[in-house]
Length: 345
Image 1 (cartoon, rainbow, N blue to C red):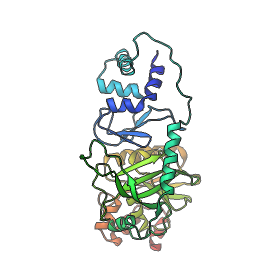
Image 2 (cartoon, rainbow, N blue to C red; image 1 turned 30 degrees about the horizontal axis):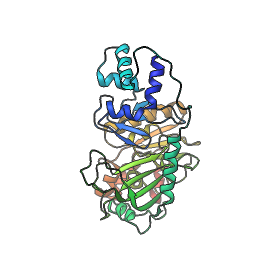
Image 3 (tube, helix red, strand yellow; image 1 turned 180 degrees about the vertical axis):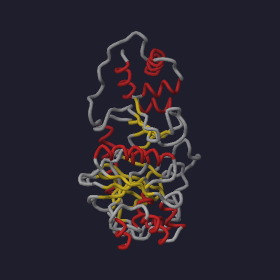
Image 4 (cartoon, helix red, strand yellow; image 1 turned 180 degrees about the horizontal axis):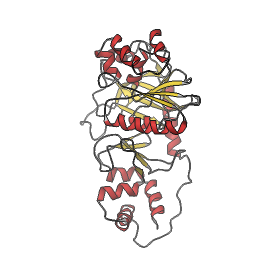
């Protein structure tokens, strides 16, 4: 069995491979998230767990470095093999295969898998079971973050009892149901491809006291939580709160929250956009995501402009700085003609 076939077989057991060799990571939707190929804690490297329209299971990308590969690369880094022969031997041991090559047929066809479509269906059911955000704990949570005007946001809903699966990072006895802010993740045509969940503390003043209070479900890569309809320009960024904070100063500007730095780097540009603002967080992951976006924009003929907050992110600015300071900071960074949008806030 050659390297290509072994890589494919590993992809069929991608989650098990990740649990063995990337044990400091966690599953989120159709991906395994971890810090890097050396199994550091974090979320910048994502491994595809199921076959999908955008590629086979087992392929991975590190948004912080731009590195990518397959599960054989992960095994090589984890075990510290000195060559391909050792890497293939380790892969065979994991798969319980003999060293003598054998021919094994594919167990499923390529393309969108049942698991992939199942996650999307589950996301749609979750969205259908949620309610409008007005007057709910989710609205109270956003208001506690300084985000007031949310009643007209069709992308956000509320679920009073959203299932949470405790991870090994949660203490024993962690409740499995919490109220949650549910955000619709959509493609460029407006179709819902997944959801983003933010579990909330029952007080409405903070996120739930769990290890991973934010998770996605469904097809997220390339898509986003959207506020407004894209024109010839728009702003993209990582977090929902970050983008809603910018909306307080730029209510007429279309916005898209990509939910993480890894997904930000992979955002699919809507047709007709020729100026793209990228709201950056002040961290290495945000820097790497912007670099990846800038490179893609250059090849697509799209002008790309970074937007930097005064503090750590734009929600910090909204809560800790004056509105005037935020607007002045943005005015210095907006492209020609767009500073007028601030005066409409």
